[in-house]
Length: 98
Image 1 (tube, rainbow, N blue to C red):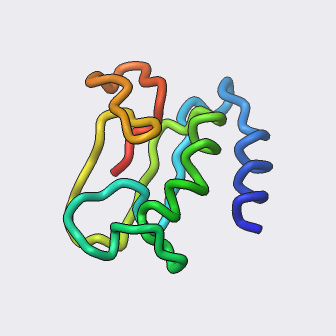
Image 2 (cartoon, rainbow, N blue to C red):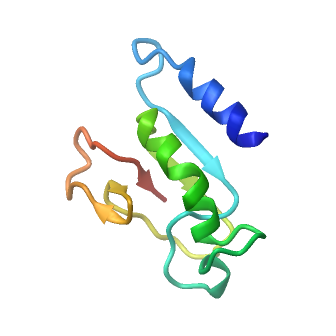
C-alpha cells in the first residue's frame, strides 16, 4: 500500500545527505475552512488522512508536509497530535503543515 511504501522510503533517508524531508499529499491533514476537510471520510477527509500519516511523519522526523485540495493558503506551527509543539520554526520537533 501507499503507507507501506512511505514507511520504507522514509526509513531510507540519511539526514547527512538529505537535511530536509518534505511530504506531499493532495488532501490535507490539517485545515480549517472547508467542509471537504472535516470528518473521517473514507474518501480522504482530514481526520482520515491524519490518522494514517501523522505517526509516520513524526517517527521519521518529516520537516514539512505540503497539502492541496483546499483552495486557500493555510500553514501551521509545528504540530503533533493536534497540538502546537513550538511557535518557532527553528529546529522544530514536529512537522509544519502548509
